[in-house]
Length: 126
Image (cartoon, rainbow, N blue to C red; front, top):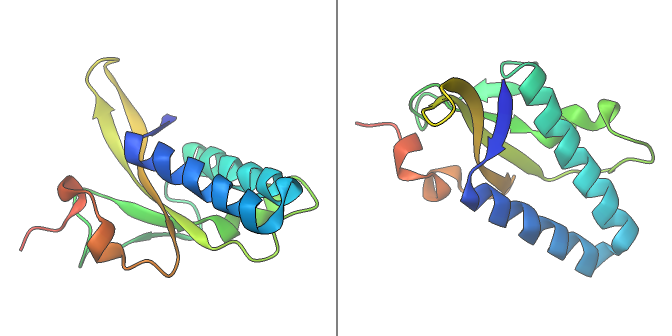
């Protein structure tokens, strides 16, 4: 299955890298980008891998979260010491291509209130 970033996740990604470079420099931005990209490859390889979590109280439709820190050992060295972001994703049918994909809806800071930043179609219906 292929990983596809939703438009909001693409914006998150660009923003994360901008802030990383602004605060910590170009090399730090490159390391963080490499870690996020490794995280995407890891969930592409196994969407239910160790570290991924269902959050049934919040998330619907098989959505999961995965903290990028679980991909540190697979990322290029030197690595990121304290990664602070997680992926929000789910398996989804791509009607244009007629196949299943892994849609990453958001890339969020781990201090973010997940419930406030969920896309509407990821919210658990009460």
